[in-house]
Image 1 (cartoon, rainbow, N blue to C red):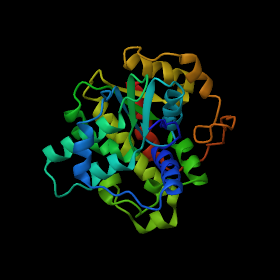
Image 2 (cartoon, rainbow, N blue to C red; image 1 turned 45 degrees about the vertical axis):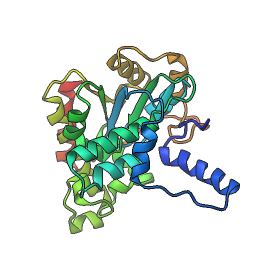
Image 3 (tube, one colour; image 1 turned 30 degrees about the vertical axis):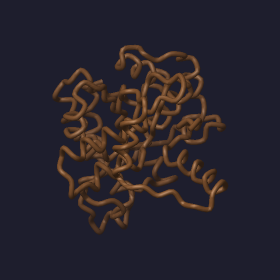
Image 4 (cartoon, helix red, strand yellow; image 1 turned 90 degrees about the horizontal axis):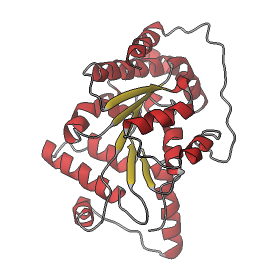
Amino acid sequence: ENKRFDEPFFDETISSCKINMANRSKFLPTSDLGLIKTISQQVENIPINAFIFHVSRCGSTLLSQCLSAVSTNIVVAEAPILDEILQNSLHKSEEEIELLFKETLKILGQKRHEENLFFVKLDSWHLNNYEQLRKWFPNTPFYFLIREPKAVIQSHQKRRGIHMIPGYLPTTSTNVIVKQEHFENFDLYTADVLEIFYQKIALILAFKNSLDVVFDYKNSPEKMIYTFNTLINNQLIDLESMVKRTNYHSKFPNQSFSEENPDWTDFPHTSCLQHYLKLEMYE
């Protein structure tokens, strides 16, 4: 119960806890959805302070790690259970899905010691759940992180995320219909997914909700922290520790990080790039 969510991703924390559990007992813990409601009614929780949306490889993991650097923050990064609720609750009503999602948040945002702020970084494809989540959380800040498609694609060339592999996720997750040429050129598929993401963010920002703010990673990680803090009414403390964390790799906290400057003179995915550039008006 003293374990903090301070790994880059939520499932890394859970894996660590499972290893400890396996070392203590030969029995495997099991549960069902009914347990979520039971536990959520028993814990003291912190209400959600902000959701972080992103197009992937755009500083969202770094932001969540910066927030985790301060012990008064609870930060949950891409929890599989939240994705399961949003994507695989086909036999439940909208009201049941909302209740299940909020009950799960209560458990994830459980107050253990001195915590007073709670943030959730969603999966990138949860941009498509914006209307649903905005309806459920009308007064919660939503922070959208973007980055130029060229840099995002380069990152996925090194280690491709599951949502950038054609056919790995259902079409309903990315809203991209898989074509034969996607299997021949994964970068083309990544560009098509990014184009959908950029289009979605543009539609969201067109509503001009003051609680929906976009930030481009090119404007520096340090500024990202301060912009996020402004969105949540300057509730963060110890910004110095958070800024210090930006000097290290987002996914490997012990490794120093330096930004690469590749040559992007030849970028064939012009449509994707054009939709990214349209977002500049909302910064």
